[in-house]
View 1 (cartoon, rainbow, N blue to C red):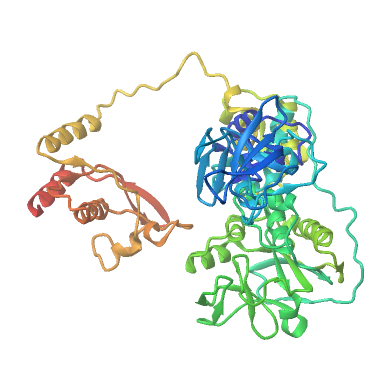
View 2 (view 1 turned 135 degrees about the horizontal axis):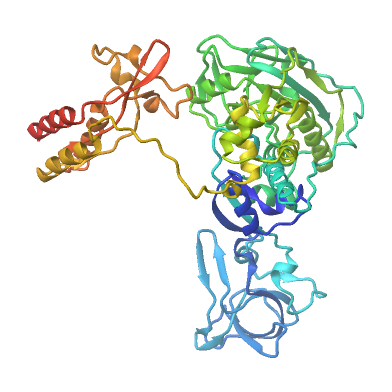
Length: 621
């Protein structure tokens, strides 16, 4: 996940450097894997300046070239050979100085001093496409006469520079899958370090309903799959390109701008972590939104133009006649906002993670929305995010909010309540954390203390922390903010000695390995996750004994292995495909089976299994 520092600074009063931010994020468990620079114009227009053409004459040996002298604000007047037909004396132009990198599409070149048809050239007078500010290449870009000579081109074009941090977000930290979520964690850590800062959400105080002329009611048929659905209509809008500030925010994190309405929904998603969807109101037949599943094998054309057959468990956002959108995953081809849209319906919802996960896996669709919903979104932010997006759409697309907020929330989700004992905290962290500090950290993490005794606390966990359900989860959060590096390492290590004789399994493995390697074998290490279909129809390792993964990465990695055989066979096949001969492999590893409701580890006999497998592969080759 990519985080823009310019964007992040909107929510934190303390302006941290890129290195400080990366270090703090890594300390609190949001490991920064990559840091890169972003410029709103490719290259940031370094070594490009405003120049003035002093003289312009035809090149003596080329009809289509001109020889110019250009003032770039220094004591040295540059000689530049230019091929543009519109170059003339007295013009204010953009000049690429020596060392400037000019990028055109996927190609780039560096400006160097040289000769063109025998005449010295010490720079380049640029066209729009050579600057990355347009597509015109008919001639050089001519500026207003009042522009100051020597002004950096980056200043003239208001180039925005940014640092983007890529965070290796673990599946349990979906609360940090937004700029505000990251800022919230940073603020808690800064409070712990006694560094002054203020965390602030964008204000929605000025949100108001202009009229109630266009209400679209909502009906939730499948309340198990859709726990909350919030919507509003906005009329008399003008769909067009987004302003530069919004485009730059999205481009910095790798998002492609589309139009002002869709860009706002993407902006709010990456700002607050709440997915939104905008419907063209004219496509909502029957003037009603219905949230339900459709019959098995119903055909639906998604936004990418692909016709998909729906499963009976796929939750759909429908009108009274047909489905319009795969809820929380992907929009429909016909119902989205386009340049022709004049009225829209804006959705902000909370969908059940299990339903979204199954649908995304079935249709092999992974979107920014499904990524968040299938890991657990925040049901409490739906209305706030809707107001935030509606205000931005009014600002950028005009229009008027033409209905009340429709909020269908049949069974409000209750936050988790946990008992937290001080003794347990200190035991797991490894040292005694002061009570006042524990309370301070809990407050900074929005964990509310409802009651307390000298020994324990009763707390309520915020709903945006769907991964925090036990005391150990809260203690892990306390430790993150307390600081892993703060915990002192003991000078003395205690160990329990056992005098019962035990076989040295590692020594035995090494002896077997040495034997097999000396006979030309290689040790393999395969994935503990494997394909469940391998065990279909087997008697010794039946499919019913497979320990299944609740949230598999793919159908090829959906169970824990019961035997090392299939992993090694995959390695043999892969080597055969690459024309590798004389394949001799062996492997040591744990295998797993499922019995009486619990997954248990079974360790194969390292000697017999490895030798049998080695002999089999040896004979095969």
